[in-house]
Every structure is written in C-alpha cells, then in structure tokens.
Image: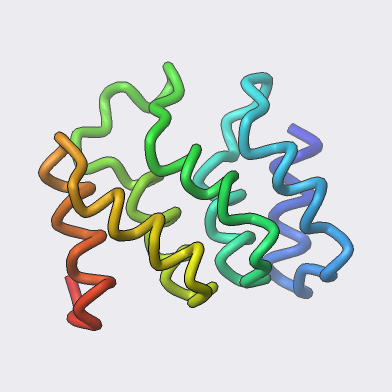
Length: 117
C-alpha cells in the first residue's frame, strides 16, 4: 500500500530523475501490483537506462494481470519505449512488433510508424 501512495504522490508532484534506478528495480519485483504505474513513470522520465526494464514489462504478464487480454501493461511499456526515442528503444519496439501477441505487435508497429493506436 505504501508503494501505491508513493506513486500517487509522484504522479501529482513529479518524479525526480534519481528515482529511475528504483523504478527499474520495481519493474521486475513481484511483491507489488503497481507495474502499470512503474511503466508510466519510466515513460515520464524517459531515461535510456530503463529500456531493458520496459522490455521486461512489455513481455511479462504478472499473475494479477492474467485476465487482461488487452495487455495494458505492455502497451504502457511500448509507449514509454517510444518516448525514450534512442536507437536501443527503437530496436526494442521493432522486436516487440514481431511479437506472437497481436495486441503487442500492433501497438509496437503503431509507435514505430508514428500513428495513433
């Protein structure tokens, strides 16, 4: 619950750049249910250091999100990768555009083409 409150405060008042490493660690932690907010926060910060964590969030389905066929977590990670805009982030989008999951592939292709979803 503390993480949820911390995320609310940060979304209200802003994320400090020095939170990037903590958010990267939270991306793969399985003790919380704030992964969508983590992806959004990393997208806000646009740090090239977060590319690997965002790839993980785009590909991973935490057990508490198994019901989500729309793959909202993956979509948020894809948008965050697009916002980073580095060659490494673009390569990640190209890889995700070939995903077996049609929703992930479609969203990655849309980001690569600059089109809205």
